[in-house]
Every structure is written in structure tokens, then in C-alpha cells.
Length: 257
Length: 298
Image 1 (tube, rainbow over the protein chains, first blue to last red):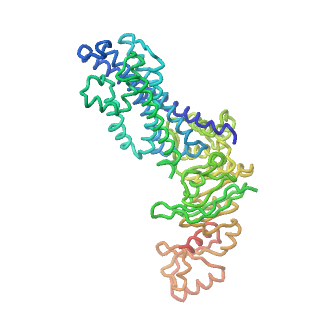
Image 2 (image 1 turned 180 degrees about the vertical axis):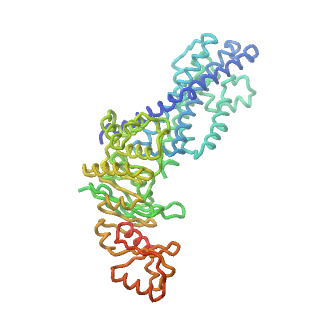
Image 3 (image 1 turned 60 degrees about the vertical axis):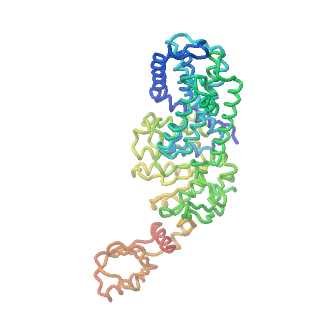
């Protein structure tokens, strides 16, 4: 077979990027503004009241990586899930199903597209927060690794949600009852050491906690648990979700009859 | 020679509905083939199985020798499908839509062929218009363009002219005929039977998931040669009721074998004292053949 026919996924990736870029006001600027509002309000209210890592990190500085990662995660999820559900509901998914694209092609294109959007919005949030004062990134490779893995995981979760949902209402339920609680209870706004023992223990079952804690380690060299542990957990979670998604795509679950 | 399409014992059930029951069909390379049938006959299901959109419960389908399941990449690259539903991606212009579809097949720098498609589909002036701004007929033509953008040797057109005006329909068929002359195999489903009669050399008729007729157009027309009488009368003699193909408020569509039978019909009407309001005759065309075959398989 002509090797060129194996490169179709690059066009699907291009289409995914073009799709969110064409509505960048909604897909990039709006989430950056939301993150900025979080930072303004929480830092103003809590800066002098909350002590993080025994006072070695100010609350506003602590909040920045959490908000950046939250933006990365939420937007990666939003991109793949909204793209797929819109295509399913309007019927134009057929344009992707008719060409010779393999399950891996579909997975790669949708998830990479989601990662790019998540990382672009995350970078935007980081740039805006620099207005609150310079913030050093002590271990940029750790931060990058968790940003890449986190966006890949949420892009994959978005793909799963888009595959399983038949209507926008079901997708919203996935977002409101799974993604949002896991994100907000992952330590974006607090260190889990400030929680009672029960909630601390429970946080260890939240994979989002490891993404955000590991990402924060990249900034401060400080974290609630060892970054190596977080990396292993996040990698295993990513691999498991990837395998599940590839099985769904191979079976054509809710995509092909 | 490898057939363009080979369907062997394909069956598919959706819940309680048996959409296809053991369908066998071979379409030779280079044919202009018609797939006809009433709504719900299974045409779209059969096409969807060929395109890999629906999995068959049993049987197999091949495009130019490539199995649509085990060798789906090659099968899909050789197939172009115009879907029945009027679907589009609202984010993109006409040209972007065609370029993206071309890219899905790994074909880049396809501008010359895209320009030719736009020209033949009378869309050149709309190339940079967003899909949302197009009329239904224009969107339908873009769908046709998307199916042709990778120059597939086998082209399936599922109701391609629904909503397309007469003038453009003619130019569209001119383009499809040219593709067929250039060696592309065309499989057409349509409710416009005069289109199928004018274009298709061979025809299969589906009903309730089964092929009920499969022959050349000439054979079908000659096998069912005869007359169709459209009769509007206050009554129809009982002996002729079995010849009614369709009845609508005092108008009967009857099938006759010859002109001699017409004399018998008129005599029976006179004998019963029936009042004839209107009577017209038509020699068999594909529509009549279609109606007779469908009536026979009630």
C-alpha cells in the first residue's frame, strides 16, 4: 500500500488544531481569563492566611502551577470531547470514518490535538500570571513531563467521553460529575497536608492529584509526595486509558454500528 | 479480472429488523450499476457495510479484492462514498473541506484535482465560502466532491441528486458519466428511477433485505415488457383486481401483457356498465418494472 495513505492522521491532527484555532477567542482566551480571575480572587483572599510547605512558598506562587495545570487538563478534555461529540451529533464524523484511518491514527490525532490546546492555554495562563511577579521553574523537565502526560490523559478521557456520549447532556454529566470534582479535589488550590488525615488518604486515589503535585514539583522542587512516584502513577494511568481507548476505537464502539 | 465489489452472503440485523438476509452481489470493474429498492430495503445498510461503517453479522465484502474488515485500509482507499445524509463540518470552507478530506487519504498538494472537481460541480465561485453559508444543493455537491477527492476507482453514490436542481443534476451526471468512461466503477442508489434507467447498465433491486432482481437493464425491461394502464373509473371488474399494481381514489394502475388484453379490459368495463373518466397507456419503463417486481414480492 502507498505509504502516503498512512499519513492521513496528520491531516486529522491539522483539522483538530484548525478547529480550535478558528474559535480561539472561546477556546484559548476565555479559559485564560477564567484562570486569571481565580488567581485574583484566591490570592487576594488567602495570601496572608495560608501557609504552604512550612511557609517556604507564598500562596499566590503556589496557586500559579495549580491553575496552569488545571487549565491544561480542562482544555485538553474539552477539545477532544467536544470535537468528537459535535462530529457524532452533526453526522460529519463519517468523513473521518470513511478514509483508511486506523484506531491508532484516530487516537493519535485527537489526543495530540487536545494536548496542543491544553498546553497553549496552560502557557497563556502562565504568561498572564507573570504579571503577579516572576516565578522561577526549578525543574522545567519535570514540569514539562507532567504537563505532557496530564494533557494526554485528559485528551484521552475526552475521547472516551466523546465516544460514549450520545448527546451533549451526557458529555456535560461526564465533565461535571467526574472531571470537575477530580480536578478541584486534586490540590489545585491547596496542599493535601492541610487536609484532615481521611481526606489526605483519599486524595491518593485521585490520579489528578499526582499530575498537579508532580507539575508543582517542577516549579518549586517541593511536593506533597515524591515526583518519581507521581510519574509512575501518571504513566500507568495514561497507559491504561490509552489501551482502553484503542480497544473502543478498534471495536468502533458507538462510532461504527 | 477482480470484481470492483464482491458481496458474499452478507446478513445484518438491527434489533428485531433483519436489514439484510444473505445478500450476494458482484459488481464488475467499470460498470455503472444501479442499486434500487424502496425505503428500508437495505440499500444504505449494504453500502455502509461496504464502507466499513456497519459490521455485517455474517458474510464478507470486498472492494477490488480487498476485504473491508481484514484489509480495510486498502478497501477504503479504493472506495469513495457519497452519504445520503446532508452532513458538513461548519468550521471550514468548501476548499478546506476538500483539502482536509484529501489529506485523510494521505494526498497532499491535490490542488489541480480539487480545482477540477470544483469546476465540474459548479462550486469554483464558492470555494472559499464557509459550508454553513451554502444551500442544500451546494452542500450535496460538496459531499460528492469529498467522495471523489482521492480519485477512488469505485464510487458509491447514495441518493446523490436529492435536493439538486435539474440543470445541475444534468451537469453532475455528465461528470459522473465521464468518470465512468475513464474507468471508474459507479454504484448508484436513487429514487429517481428515470436516472437509473438512463445511466445504469445493470441493476439490482432490493426488498426487505433481499435481492429480488438482478439483471441488465435491457433484460429487466424486456422481461417485463407490456403495458401499464392508468384508469380512472367508478368501478373495476372483479376479475381484473389482481392486475392492479397501485390504486389511489378511483384511479387504478394496471399491468397488461399486450394490447390484446386492453380490448378485454375495455369489454369487461362495458359489460359492467362502468364509467371511464380517464384512461392512458404507457409502455414499460424502469419505474413500471420496479413497481411490478416490488408488487410481486409483497
